[in-house]
Amino acid sequence: MFWVVDNGSSHRRKKAADRLTAAFPNTVLVHTPVHASWLNQVEIFFSVVQRKVVAPHDFTDLAQVGTAQPFQWKFPHSDLDDLLARLDRHTADHPEESSVAPAA
Image (cartoon, rainbow, N blue to C red):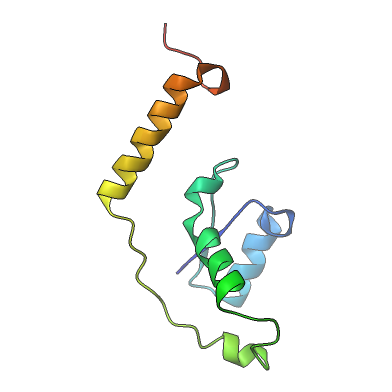
């Protein structure tokens, strides 16, 4: 099982990965890239769930939260192609914002 996390200070170091492995030996801690929040679809998904579905105190105890079921995430190639094309257009329109130096 992979546990996807951002680069927050509470789970950035090796200690966090060791704690997770000690508690759940079949898990691997995976960090999303730094400064790439658009890649963090899991965080975006749960942000929407938190704002639109889950109200404070909806769960009476941690056991209720532990009964979560996996879901099928869908991000088809066509959506990825569209996103990459938009990024290319943005970079072409705003070269001063690009962090990558042009090839020589």
